[in-house]
Amino acid sequence: MTIRISFLIGIALLCHSTLVAEDNLTWQAGVASAKVTPETPMWMAGYASRNKPSEGTLQDLFVKALALQDDDGKRLVIITCDLISVPRPIRDDLEKAVKEKCNLPPEGLLINCSHTHCGPEIRTTRWSLDGLPPQRLKQANDYVTRLQSTLVKLVESALSDLAPSRISYCRARCGLAMNRRTPSATGFRNFPNPDGPVDHDVPVLKVESPEGKLRAILFGYACHNTTLGIFEFCGDYAGYAQAYLEAAHPEATAMFVMGCGGDQNPYPRRTIELAQQHGRSLANAVETALETQARPITASLRTAYDTATVKYQTAPTKSELQKKAESNDKYDRIHAERLLRQLESDGKLREKYDCPVQVVRLGEQVTLVALPGETVVDYSLRLKNELSNIDGSGPAVWVAGYSNDVFAYVPSRRVLLEGGYEAGGAMRYMTTVLQHGPFKPDVEERIVTKVHELYRALANQ
Image (tube, rainbow, N blue to C red; front, side):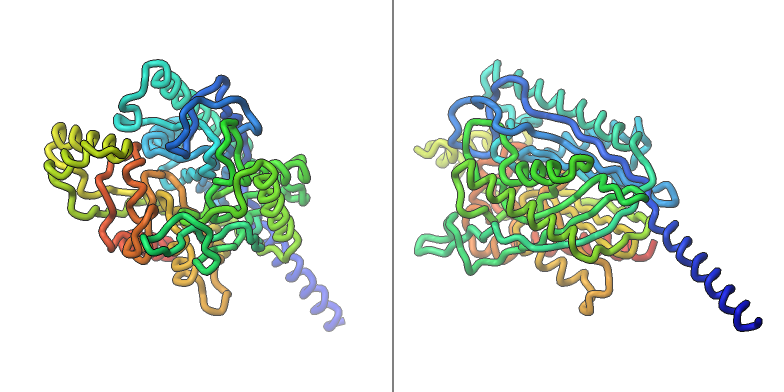
């Protein structure tokens, strides 16, 4: 009898602990999606060589939101966008609106863009609007106004959709990306480099109802969305990957998170068929991840958000800019003219920039790091190495680039010293933030140091 009672007590305790464990896994999650394809032809973003507006839509563009709430009522909304960038003014406007309407704090908002080069231009600042003809200026302003309104409603919809859910993490790999920085006699050029660093990880966050119904698939990859350069709106490979996943899982919303793909391109490129193939390849990797042993995530959320101050190298003098303004190169000339106007109006050129850095801890299972700008792959490889436990027992580390403020290419120290397009050559094309030239070589340390600071702060919460 004593043995039987002890056995029954043991079973009861086991059932109780199982129920407690299951309760600890129950989140509140909400999902929302909205189409943001321009309703009329308009100028597109991503390639300076474009010389005319769009000529139709190959694939609709979307913004999507995943809202998460833990046992203590702490909330996070992750927004993904089939757009070229997330300018800081859009982040700031949305941050203010959802704080007022939804009581969502800044650290509870994360915005990431796919960086498709077949989306509309996003112009929000003085320099990005500089020189546009009236009709194009109005169209650009109207689109941003519509986008901002859509994003606010998107967050509200996702939060109103909160329902008990289970969240788990899994991962796989995909090989469509290749490093695009190839050394040559004249410096680094944009050309496939099979020996360059890559990050082929495909991290996946799976959101299910308590009954196991798949509600959302949040997945990432580090590669430029530059398979295409057509004059039709399209999400490129990331858009196709999302579409394939939603076709296979009709009741789920698929959301793409761009990784540190600033120096990565999909290869081969240039055709719609290749964009579809790359999308299928990535979707298959996500499906593979969903087949693996997923890591359940306890319903505990910690978030941190701050800025890292990055500094620029010595600015050109007025006489140097005046000389550059006489260049036969159209883009050098325009860049110099803008800098001269900035020098006249502000009395100096920009010396530093405060860029946002965000760290999110999902339970004790996943750390999500969201970095600003077009971050190169070195950031992801380094942070995953530094923040992961050697034995793999600690939280998985997911590093996203292109988050919260896409203001410039953000090179690592290695890339900056090597030189080339990502190191500073692209600055002349950047207008959301007018910048005269490369960052100082400590740009990587400044950003990584801020990540570690926020990571430690979350560990101590």
